[in-house]
Amino acid sequence: MNAVTLSEDNRRKLLEIAAEEMLEKGFQATSIGDILTKSGLSKGALYHHFPSKLTLGYAVFEEIFVADCAHRWEPALSDPDPISGISKLLREQVAEMTDEMVRLGCPINNFGQEMSPIDEGFRQRINREINHWRDELEAAFKRGQAAGNMKTEIDTRQVATFFVASIEGAIGIAKNAQDRALLETCAEALIGYLEGLRP
Amino acid sequence: MNAVTLSEDNRRKLLEIAAEEMLEKGFQATSIGDILTKSGLSKGALYHHFPSKLTLGYAVFEEIFVADCAHRWEPALSDPDPISGISKLLREQVAEMTDEMVRLGCPINNFGQEMSPIDEGFRQRINREINHWRDELEAAFKRGQAAGNMKTEIDTRQVATFFVASIEGAIGIAKNAQDRALLETCAEALIGYLEGLRP
DNA sequence: CCTTGAAAACCGACCGGTTGGTTTGGTAAT
DNA sequence: ATTACCAAACCAACCGGTCGGTTTTCAAGG
Image 1: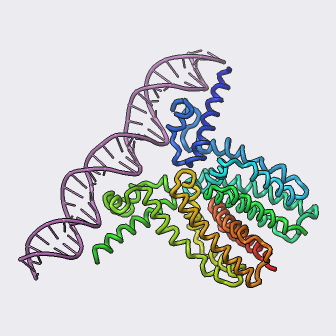
Image 2: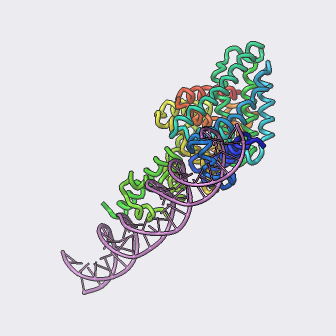
Image 3: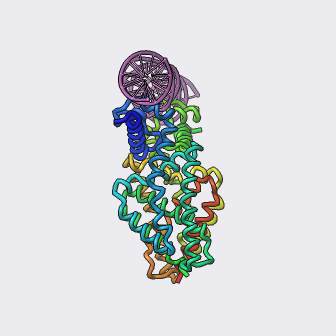
């Protein structure tokens, strides 16, 4: 094993365990000591790779959470009929969610709800990701309009914003209730809403 | 000033300052010491009224957060036309929200997102409140159906669930973005959705 | 009206443990 | 010899919570 890849492995290990802890307990309540115990590495190793807990949190967000979530919607967004493409993917995503994922909620939104009011760095990163998702949705809706699959009079930006908010909200209340049925219910309602946007 | 009411005042002061801190920083990151400093009271006083930080958190949730939020929707729910009643109240609520409220989000949902995965006591209290809200909405929709103001074929439970989720989601992304316009956008989309449920 | 006594309310020093972070020292690859 | 990497000891600050003691309150007894 090459030394540089070994070092990279340790960094990755710290990152992944930190992600687990932060997803379960939140950023602030996550203990550096717990991460070290679970990883079997030392404090020196961690602070070699990450200068502070905050930068570790940023790295977890960008290299784990965003990397896992960001490209999940792309297949549906290229469909010339975005309503059916999105509906199909939505049902898939809900079906694929494990009970653990229902219990823990959306990693990106979790960080947002915890950290947005108290750390601007987190807030900007989270906001950028949400906006990116929304922009992609809006572009898909615009293509749907051009293809004649959606009403031309609807405000695509409004629909995209509402869609993102509703998904995050649905994940949130399902997390509170620890009940995936709430997710399915909201998904069906959201699909019904989208279907109402056809010409 | 009566002694029992003076004591009650101190309890209330601790409760309100704890609520502020917990709303801003979350439950876990809130320091007992900070609450004492801000209140000017002593540790003995706090632990006289509340046996632990956890029970203080429960009390904040029930006596401050729930008390402030719970009865906010009642006027709209008695309207025989729930769609117009709820739409009207929704616009009012959004307009009345201060920038501070946009920045801090929904107290109940904040606690839920932070504490649901790690404390069952919080989870149950929050879930009970969400269910209560949803049940009231559903009852209003049923009355709307009976009065001929809503389609009879719609699933009122689904609509109520989706409504709650969307509101919480909208508050959440507006908090991330620190932008009340997102709230207004989602409110209008939600009203459009409700209008589509008329016969 | 005054005294007494017990309970309620409150205070703040103190406790063990944990926090994020630093320092120092050594090892292995280049 | 230099650089990258990591381990372990260490640090001051802070955490929630406890505890012995003090003050305040208020009813009962004289």
